[in-house]
Image (tube, rainbow, N blue to C red; front, top):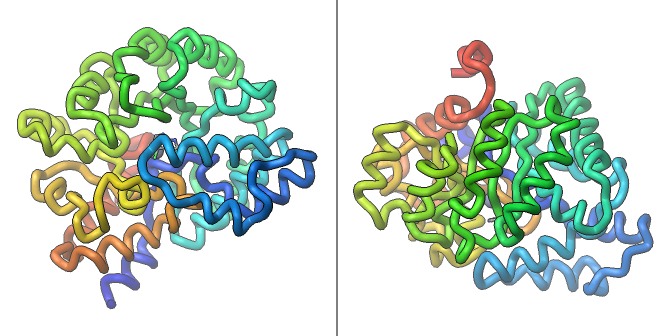
Length: 327
Ligand code: ES4
Ligand code: ZN
C-alpha cells in the first residue's frame, strides 16, 4: 500500500499516449453537438458500451469514429488541454504525445488546424501546469507510404512544433519497411523516430523498425520475448520499450494484468517504461496503469518501480541537460 502511494506521487514521464485516445465520451458528445456531427452512437452510455474490444482493429474502428468530432483548432486545443490537466494530477511532469494527422486531413481538416490547436494547449500546459510537452506526428500504417510522405511534407511548415515521427494503427500486414523512405526523409529533417512494433505483430517487425526505419524507441514491443536474439539486442542497445499494460489487456494481447510479461521484460534487462496509450478507451490514465499493474503482479518491487520511472525520463527526447535535472 505504501509502494502504491509512492507510485501515485512520483514524478513521471509519459512517452506513449495517442492524444485522440484521450478523448472522453462526454467531450466527444459535446464536440459532436457543437459541430453538428451525428455519431453512430445514441449517447455517452451507448458509446461506452462499444468499448468491448477483441483486438487492435476492433478498437481502431471506434477510435476513428470518436476522432471524427474534431473540426476546429479549439477542438484540438480542448482535447489536449483535458489530457494535460488529467496527466498533471497523476504527477506527469513530461509527456510526448502522439497525434494522427491523417485521421483529420482525410476528412478535410487542415494540417495547420490540427498542429496549432495541439500546440496552443501544449504551451498553456507548460505555462499553467509546469508540464513539459512535446508532439510526435504518427503515420497511419494501413495507408500508403505515399500518403505518409505527403503528410510529412504538409507538416514541415510546422517543423518547430513537433520533435519526431511515429508509426501506428493496424500492425498486421503493414510491416515497418513499408515506410522506409518516409522515415529516411524525417531523419534528414532531424526528427526523432519511433514506431509501434511487436504489439500484435511478430518480432520481425521490431527488427525492421530498428534496422530499416532506424527508430530510437519501440512502442509496445512486448512480443520481443519470442526471439531471444532480439531481446539480447534490445538490452545491449538499451532501446526503450513503451509498454502499455491496460491497453494490452483491453486489446487481448494478455488475458489479464497478472499474465502480463512485463516482469520478464524487466528481468531481461530491457529499458521498460509504463504508459497509458489511449486512456479514455482502455480504462485508465498513467497512475491507473502503474497501480493496477503493481497490484496484479506482487513480484514487482520498489526497485522495479524506480527503474521504470527513471527509464521514462532517460528514454525521453529532452536534452541531456534537462534530463540531468530529473534523474
Ligand atoms: C493505437 Cl494501441 C494502438 N496501437 C496502434 N495504433 C494505435 N493508435 C491508437 N492506439
Ligand atoms: Zn499506441
